[in-house]
Image (cartoon, rainbow, N blue to C red; front, side):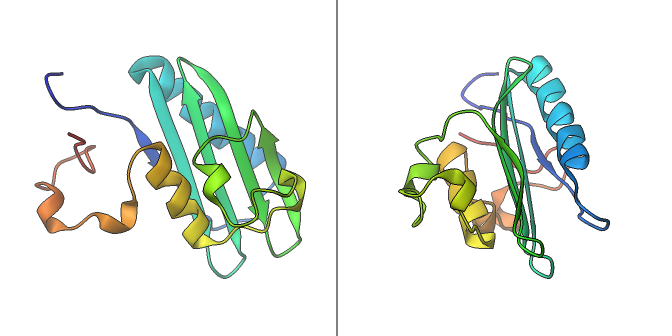
Length: 136
């Protein structure tokens, strides 16, 4: 791959009710991508329902998944050890089952794991099918 590093990043549209099962399905997709690309990440955030998740998989295995449905106050995914990126969140000193993440927290974790999606722009690279950005 030369000097470029590619990590698949999965973004999903949250249009229906989020359940433990639906997050498990997304985590399975992220894990499958990581089996092919060594590492993959998945993120979602929805302001209306206050749903937020981040998933990290390596070599076909989910190593971290956290999902929160603010509308119901339910943790829908909580597996793996808290990562260094998550330790930077303002509530990191609390147990994860008491975390109340928001959209910015998803971006903070994304930035810590790879890159901050809010920093992408037209100058990040040319439009291409299947490639959102290249990391150098």
